[in-house]
Image (cartoon, rainbow, N blue to C red; front, side, top):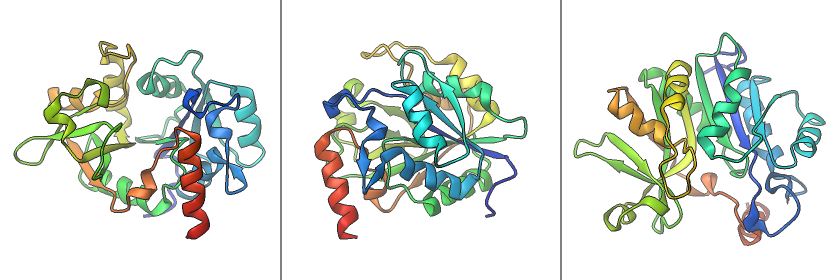
Length: 250
């Protein structure tokens, strides 16, 4: 696959969260990992895939995040004024999408180890199978805290259930959502307009686009990431330390 610099794929990086569990005044994505702000690890990977066709959704300490990223990369920004969930964050990015964009690849600013080869494989799988949405999944022995990918008997994806909304049966599922997706632009725009915030967090979950896709009989793909370390999210200072240690040892 080429470098996708033609703008047919735009990468959206979610970087608006406060990261309260970091117990720090600094925006989560600005915490230093291997000598650089965490967000820059994700931005570098995205640039390697899509060139300048990148939108970063900022919110908490927006100006500071923009300043740090702009000093190192030529990207666009979208502002999420209030934190109303990942689905709402992507909604904020929609007006910034270029006309030629057919597919949107969604990354998290706090998942810094994702590789460009994994992203390329996800995009290729999504495009070749003509999926409306493709989820990057990973198998974890201890899936606590992650959204579970619920599959039907034939292996098709039914929905993604967040930890807080999962029942006991769903909590036993070990195939989890990495928070990384490739979505057809048209379907993304339609599905985001249909998401309701009727969950325990009262937020607009991006994960709900999967169930919407199923209800509309759209094509849902599941691409498994073989290396679980690539999709490790950083939510606490301990997570940061663990990833830092891994990078030093690699």
